[in-house]
Image 1 (cartoon, helix red, strand yellow):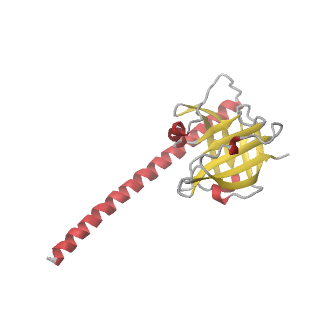
Image 2 (cartoon, rainbow, N blue to C red):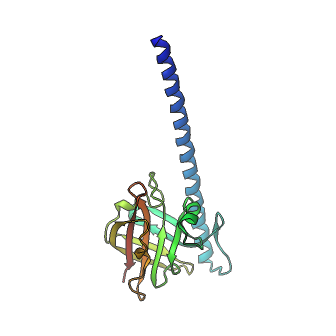
Image 3 (cartoon, helix red, strand yellow):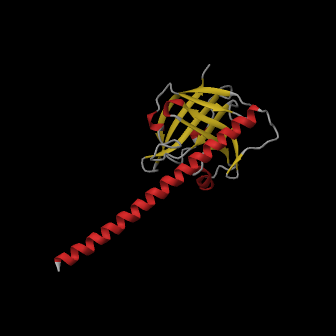
Length: 197
């Protein structure tokens, strides 16, 4: 009787292990597809902007690409998607794809541009943002093919409903605010950066 119970228990464990492995493989595969789409979008953006094709609108999964964010220290580079909404519920789908413009002016305009990205466990998107420190560089490339460097000058954790992070501290200065989740999505990790003179 005990042997039969052990066999049933082992069979259930084996089935659960197979299901878990299948989900991990699917998630890994989907993550790789998204990363490939991001690389293609960056290449298209760079090519079109360098060719000065002003009438050419670059899109990724139906969303307009308005710039590129690159953070050399954590080796990330993503298109910035313009989602035309500031509703957190409506940002969920495009954030599965790339970094999104959450609030603010155009890329590299004066004032504060807030961009948001997932804190993925595999280190993609803003998954390695926790390793950034004050002084680290964030590079933004805009539709005019202008790349501006920003140095991180403030890092803190806040409540998801804190809208003060979106405010511009000085309208004569270029700023960027990186937003990602932390603490099991209960809080937000905020990294603020200003243009390097």
